[in-house]
Image (cartoon, rainbow, N blue to C red; front, side, top):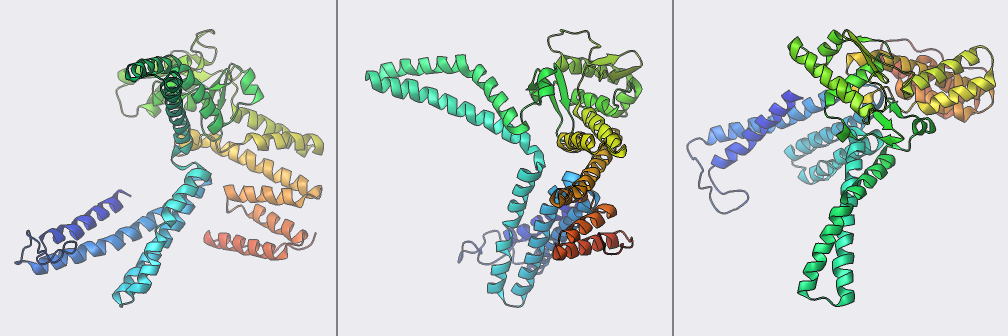
Length: 462
């Protein structure tokens, strides 16, 4: 993407620069002549303008190529974010390519009907990616907006009630209005912090949802499926409670270790690569203290209650620290074991609970960190097995729509899952949705062709 930025910058300079020194009437102020125009080099001006004009479509093509490459490499939520942006960018690129061609052959009227009307596709796609798939950490933006808007409304309401309302009731003059303004300021100063704290709680619950019963009962609980969140006494710990991003990352790395010790050498190398060991050893101690302070700010428990540390390694005590990914894996494992043992009723209860618990991939915001990959893949694999088992039970219980929904969820996570494709086609075929089954089969065949794998035969029979 950096190369695309430089191409755009060069195109802008080459397109706009020559207009500054072009001789003759100015296009935006005709018939005035350009006072900075240079008559000596008209050929150079035309050459620079042509070069700049050519760089813009080159940058557009490079932007489309970058999005396509990122889309093909992405997975999960990021793939859904990018597909909207990639589609909109391709649409605008094609529209403006047609715009330039039609303009060059003299059909400027038709060109105006094709090029500019395509531009709203990009903000629309960005809006969908933000609101539907949480692009750009929109949860945090909404939370801060709720707090800021609520405080602005509170301050405005206090001044209207005290200055305008009370002032009108007592028929105050200018001097009394000044006194009332002082009273309103005092009320705002006294009530500001409690109102702010209350708005923070409302915003956090509005954006991140209410804590579960287990999270309310636990002194500290951590959600790592989807967005990373720490709950303390049932309330979401705000970002302001963390003194550094490294402390949050330290806790995430320990979560990914699943209670296994992580050596201090490993943690220092991951958090502060290629830095002096003496310096980063002190930083690691500070980050560890911050994590402990966030989990137990009142120091009501021993230092090793949540995080156990010695001179060589650090680990979490998961017996004292509920973590959603651990609860999900436990429920999924028990449900799959019961399903394998033939206990359909017990299996469905456990597997349905595991399905509800899976709110997203493990630490989605850290998907490119090597230390998070193993647990993320383990949880995704378990979730896929949960969905596949629930779909099979739904088909056995004559609930085809439930089965279809779960097969679609599997394919949303992995578009190349051949067994899910064929099971989905078979489920649709059995319920009489023949046209949709055929379309799905063609989509499956296209996916297999994309990776050079042969497509299986169209499912037939019961």
